[in-house]
Image (cartoon, rainbow, N blue to C red; front, side, top):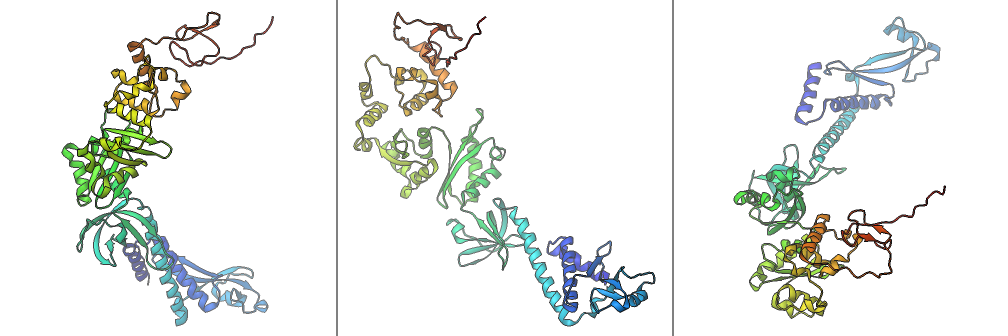
Amino acid sequence: MSNELGEAIRSLVNERGISEDLVLETIKGFLLAAYKRKFGTADNAVVQFNETNDDVQLFARKMIVEDDDFEGDITEIPHSEAMELHEDCEVGDEILIPIDPKTFDRISVQSAKQKARQDLKDIQKDTLYSEFKTKENEMIIGYYQREQNGDIYVDLGKVEGILPKRYQSPREAYRKNDKIKCFVYQVEKPEHGQLRVILSRTHSEFVKKLFELEIPEIYDHSIEIFKIVREPGFRTKVAVYTRREDLDPVGACVGLKGIRIQTIMREMEGERIDVLRYDTNPIEFIKNALAPAEVKKVVILDEVKRTAIAVVDETQLSLAIGKQGLNVRLANKLVDWVIDVKTVDQFREMDLGATVKERVDALFAQEPTIEQEFDEDEMLLSQIPELGSALIEKLNFHDIYTVEEFVNLTQEELAEFDDITDEDVLRIHEILEDYVDIVEEEVDEQQEYEFQCPECGHPISTDMTVCPNCHVGLSFEEVELDEE
């Protein structure tokens, strides 16, 4: 008996993946159910296993009472009967009486078996659910088994996963026992029925996991993925960035001669993947997002509504828009802006505000019309090449076009420009000091300066927030002096 029980326990543990403690709990539940079916209650039933857990005994716990007080209660035993089992027992003691399960009637045993089977199914479902729930949002490898109503069933070992039709790439086709790498999208444990492991090969997270597997710099977070947008089976765009100055995020993802990105594309059955650099400046980000097309300029129409125009050469128009508008549609999703792609001639024919058109004409160097907006003695930032085009574009994005406009900015206003760092501001000041002579407005002779700048010693007054000479921030506090 003990050998049979031990073998049954080992079989359940090894074949069904159920822990030994849960198997023992199921056996205990089986015996208690049979006991209750026969005696009407299991409150006084006791189940005990031996040290090796390969033998089990069932007892009835009963209170010893005087023979005259015994009323036939299942939880009590007359003293005279208890004496036959144990000579030293006394009234008020509790005694364990062995119960032979073979004495149970067929109905009691059948009822207990049904409960044990259901308990084992529930335990197995709970065990598998706990195991696969930890795999949610991870990659898993299985083998194609069959297709039903367009859904693919994948052998994952202990369970079958479901790859729904809506989560399949239109590029892919499988045969019996083909290996399939999938993203575990969701694990469900219904009240009735089998565990459901829902798989996907279309979610953007599937692409992200492939990048983590193939590109060590992404796995160790040297390179971060900002966003992934995808039209499964056709094209994917991945925006990446890094905080390391010595690392090219796009080059690292593409790999030497494109070997890394080609490996990922093969797993996606040849789907096109564009890897591009994320930029906090929306103008630069929009330019990058429209890759592989080359964008001449990006014009922001409305920052609040997030609308912009990307201006390209005639030869780049079809590439920027893409087949059936796919490239610009994915770019819109990636940058979260509404982008309208136009050629230079198409843009000039648009009915836009005069100011916007003049500024864009100036950007394309067709006519110096933007200078007409400013006085002749004002110098444009675009006339100072040492600033660099990228920095000038950032300033222009914030409607800062002249040296005077920049110099008059307060520290608070500069702090609101998220895409312009403190290092950028310092560099601009250094260039302006070397390149142009900034003439301060003449001060009223009657104005008296009572203080000096703590940094450069330049005269300052209490109504100033920035030193006019070194541009350090200023603040004044009134201090009361104790009178002696």
